[in-house]
Structure formats: C-alpha cells, structure tokens
Length: 489
Image 1 (cartoon, rainbow, N blue to C red):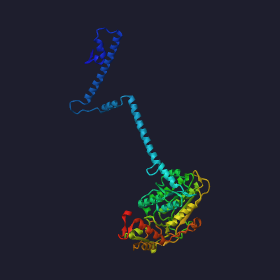
Image 2: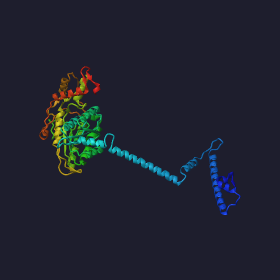
Image 3: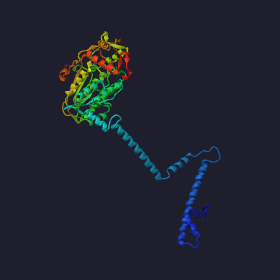
Image 4: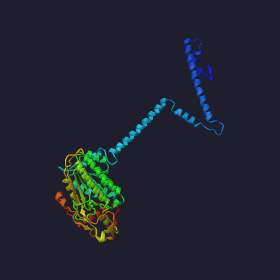
C-alpha cells in the first residue's frame, strides 16, 4: 500500500513480515492492522498539508524573482509569536520564569540593603562587636563606659587618652573628613589604638550605626565632640555646618533618648555663641542672641536643642563653651598652627586688626586644661531620668565656660612663636574682614570653678613652647634645609 511515494510497510515493518507469510491472518488482526494503517496515512497527509501551506506562505513572502515586494510583517511576527508561544502550557512556563526572576531580583536587593544596613564596609560583624565591647570595658572599679564622638579630632584624642589612662572604657567615633589633612587624624587614631581605644569610622548622622553601638554596649556617658569647626569655612560650605552641628546632634540625641539605660551627655558648644557681646568677661548668664557667624549660630541652636531634649526626655546634659583651644596635635586651620608652618617656610603671615587699629585678642586655653574640664564634667554628671524615651523626673542641665581668663593679643602670640622657633616672621597686617570673626574673647570661669573644680594652670608661653616642640618632632622640620622633612608629612 502506498500513499504518494510512502510505503505503509516502511512505517509498519511487522506488516511486511506478516504479508510474506502464506498463512492467512485472523479477521480481528486484519482489522487492527487496517485501522493502524489508516491512522498513519491520515497523520502523514496532515503533516504534508501543513508543510505545503508553510512553503506557500514563504514563497509569497519571499519570491524568487527580484523586485519590490511588500512583506507582510504582521504575518511574520505572528508566525514567530506562534513558534515561541505555541501552547497555553508554554506561556504558563514563561510566566512562571518571569515571576521567579522578579522574585530573585527583589530578594537580592533586600539582601543588599539588609547587608548595607547592618554590616557596612567599615563596621559590623561579630569581630567588630568584640572590639567595641573590649574598648568600652572599664579597667577600674566604678569606671565609666564612654562613647566619644570626634575621637580622632584635636580635643577628642586628648580626652580619649585621659579617660583611658585612668581606667575608663572608651569607644571612639569619627568620620575622618577632609576639612583638614586626614592623615593627621589617622595618626591620632594610631596613638589611640596603641592605648587600647577602638575608633569606629562612621558618621553621627548614621542612626543605624548609633543604634548598633548602643545595642552592643550600654554606655554610661556620651562625650560629644564631633562638629564642623571653623568660622570662615562656613562662608563657602554652609551646608556642612547644618549637617554636622545640628542634624548630627539631633541624630545622636535620638539614639541617646532611646537607649536603655539613657547615658549622661557632655557636649562641646563654643565661646562663639557670645557673638558680638561687648560686655567682658563673658559669663554663662549673658545673652547669646547675636551670633556673628553660621558656626556660632549652629552652636547656639545646639544649646536650644539640647535643652529641649533635656526637658522632654529627661536626658542629663552638660554643654561646654570652649575658648580657643591650642596645643600638640592641634588643628592645622587654627592661627597659631598656620603661623608656625608659614614662619618655618619663610612665608608671610596675615595678622588682622579690628576697628581703629585695635589688636585682636583671644582667651587661648591649653589643651590639658580643657581636658581637665571635660573629665570633671563627666565625673559630676547626674544620671538621665528618662526610661524608654519618656521622662521620669527632672534631669540635670548645665552650661560651663572653659577658658583661661587671660586674653592675649595676636601680635603677642606671634612674638612668642618667633622666640620658640628662632625665626623672624614676615607679618602682613590687614583690617579684619567681615567674615564672622569677633575682635576678642574673654571667659568668666567662676561657675566652672565652683561646680567642676576647674582651674587652668598653663599660660600661653608654656603652652606654645610645648606645641612647637611637638610640631618640630611630628613634621620633622630641619633647620639645615629651612623646611620640613617630607617623609614625615
């Protein structure tokens, strides 16, 4: 039996075997074979019809004769679609695959966000928490566990060392920004590490990091020294002052408010809050509603904000108004520091004068005296009275001046530096610009004496002598070359 060139026996070899036998087949077997054969024939006819139809369509779309032919693109697209999605089952499988890919992507994003939230590149993990707890553990009976922000800064480094040396636990926090050379901050960090103080690299605006720190350690105290410093820098970078000195302070206070137990807080305000006051010496009860710079305004705002958190949430808070701090490991942007650098490099220094040619004066306060005031503030801090973010009773709130009480003019400062450096300064005198600086500062420290036992003992001559000794050692100044040894910078 043949159907257009195809033999049925080629598809059913058993039929060929059966036909070759001389014996007749039973009737039922003959019927079964006949039925199977006709089904095969029907299938072959259907297949050939489909192939011929496809060939006709292809010939219509792509004729052999060249010429301008308009191709039915819709028909082509439909045919391709038919091939990809030939059945409902196939479409269902594609849908499942799409859903699976979407779910995988969302899960991956969630994992990345979770990892970033709890384990950023510079903090997190069991080893990190182990270091935090070890650094925060006091080494003396009744010792404090202190979270100290701005630990790699000038004042922060000295306070951290003082606390650690007497047996308190200290964990530092610093963002190591580039307001001035970060290598100096890294060097301070190395000094702290050598004394067992672990410094976390992070920002006080990172609420998740602060929560992680308070989860790891029940800090008894917070010494908040992190801030964007400088008066003139605010003219070009105002946002950085709001970010650090206001938003950062609020973020830290929120973390302290929610901590269990709530820590007592000591933080650095500034003598700049006295602004354009003409009454001297400046007292804590004087008005502070005329700031002369954005920096001063942010510190004044900080005092109002801390008072609010004290009143509402029962946080024990002490604010310290520092007066022109100087000494070893100081800030390169400060006048005494930049004067020293320029004098040694034979560069001119600019000395400003006030109205009518009056010399500017500052209440220069040596770092060791400031540290004593900071530590005394921690030691006399009362416990916070809040619980679970709710105030349970009145909480301590204090503000102190920490100064030297002996203002010195800027020209006198330059003369002392010349004596210690044994180099004559090239002085360029200019009238003070209207950039937020004030003509003088002078601290009344009566309140700090009475409450903290604060008693500064280092005069400017002694303090600058110690600073110059450190500067020459750290920066490797060589008198023979008249410059710095770059390998130590």
